[in-house]
Structures are given as structure tokens and as C-alpha cells.
Image 1 (cartoon, rainbow, N blue to C red):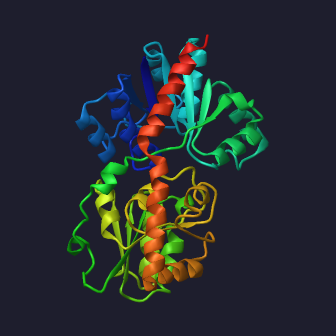
Image 2 (cartoon, rainbow, N blue to C red; image 1 turned 90 degrees about the vertical axis):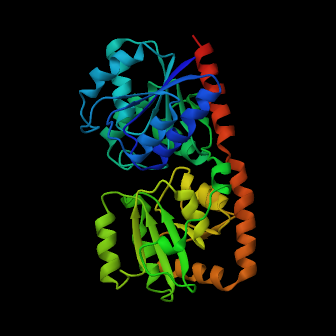
Image 3 (cartoon, rainbow, N blue to C red; image 1 turned 30 degrees about the vertical axis):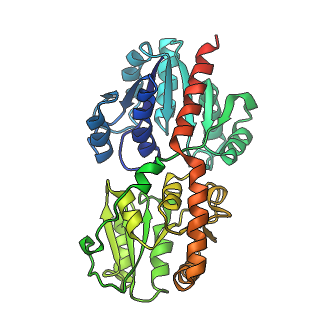
Length: 366
């Protein structure tokens, strides 16, 4: 069985990290696996995967992922694989067009990683176009039941087109991680400091600004660490400076030691406006620290009954929940215990096995 995964790039992001973590596991199961990138910039995830030498990595250059000429460049790859597994937009469109133009018989699988996007929120024309492209896939993997519900309503496609396979994380990597030395952080360290962290790209759905505003409602010994890069990073840096938080909010950029950072801090937070099935939330719950998240689709399904949920965009409620965890040791310990138990439901080995079963099922179909 030869499978090609295709994604825009290996820049920082949940889908990108999932690809990096899973491709070595497919190879361990005897799958001939390769990866095709529209943009082959050697981001840290790219270098990590290349160092493992578990798969071929092909790139279409260093330019924009929105260049429609990618369609022509994808065509030669289709004939070399039994199935192609696609992640994210716009490669979701380019591969379909490549298959249509080449009349390839290669099976196509798409993983929908989010409960929302600009196309779903867009006009009737965008919806009509989207449905045409979704229809071309042999199977659409939805990483939560909520995503399947939304996509079925949006596309009106038959239920058989969809399958729910939850994302997973390598729990052993997190449990075995050695906590980062707090004295190595940018801001001054004291024994009295209490550390919060959010790991996510700086894009509009991630809403780091709510968390930054919550810092103004917390005592001065609370320190916030923000890990990630993205177009809104500068805005968040300016907001922290304008609120007088420059010495209490650290922007660490891209880090490859996220598990060690999670083990170091006191509370882990994700203040997103929406998610698919956040790998960051699972990693956070698996770290042995309490996890706090906004009460939105893609997070509440994972976190409810384990971690703490707060109303989206409500910095006052978020600050209140942080203080409650900090000041109540029993509440803190109970939350940690429930988070650890929930994380065990999302082991990456289960996800990989379900993906392989799906590949085999699709390839049996004529």
C-alpha cells in the first residue's frame, strides 16, 4: 500500500504537527508513505520529520500555496500512489483539480480539521463550489462528531461519505518530558512566580488577546508564556505593551520543546473562538497540569467534565477560573486527575490504526 499525504507546508499548526507525528507510525506499520508540500520552506517541523528518514518529502517550491499552477505540478504524483490523503485548504482544491484533469483513478481522502472556516461562513457561491469539491473525495475524515454534523448540514452529502476518527497525540512523549528550567525564560524568575501558557498560532480564531487582557486582572507574580508564530503576533505584543504587561508576557515563537514547557508551567490555557479537535488541548491535559479552555465547539467536547471551561472572550471569567485553581489545591489536584484520565482517550496509536483500516477499506472498493 502506497499512500501520499499532501499539506500546504510544515509551518506551525495542529494539522502540520499531526502529520509530523503520524507519518513515522504509518511507516512502522509497513505502509509506504510519502509527503508532498506545496511550500517546502524548512520550518522546524520539516527538519524534524526529515531527520527521522521515515518517508520521502517532496515539495513544489517556496511560493504561495494559493498558486493554481500547483494543480499541474501535483498531477505526476497521483499515478504513483494507491491513495492520497489531503489536509487543509487550498490543497484540498488543488488535488481534486489535478485528479480531474489527469483522469487519475487514485483514491482521495480529506481530513477536515476545523468546525468552521471562511468558506463555511461565506456566500452561496462559495458553498456551491465547496460542495463540488467535497463530493470528489472517496472519504472525508471528520476529527469530531460535531464536525461531521456541521459538514453534513453544509454539504448535504450522504452520511456514507463521512467517517469520524479523532486526532491523537503521543502521550508517552509528554509523560517522559523533562520540565524546562524556569530560569531560562526571558523575564525575571522568582520562586513566587506562577506560570500560565498557551500554545497556538497567532491567528484570529486563537484569541490570545482575551488571555492577555485577563493578565491585567491577576496579581503581578502571574507570568504568561505564549508559544507560536503568525500574522497577529505583533498585535498581541503591542497589546501586552499597551496594557503594561511587557515584563509579564513572554512571546517564545516556534518551539520544539513544547512538552517540556507544558510540564514546567502551572496552568495551561487555550482561549480559541473555535477549534476542530485541538491537539494542544489533549497535550495540555496529558501534561499533569490543569487545562482551561473556552467553551466553544471543538474544545468543549474534549474538555467538558475534565478541564475547566469559560465563556469565549470573557477575560474576567477566565481570570476568576485561574485564581480558583491557584488558590484551591484540592480543586487543582482534582482537575489534573480528570485531565490525565481524559487525555488517555486520545492516544495517537488508536488514530493511526483507524486510518490504516480506512485506507484498506477504500482500496478494496472498485
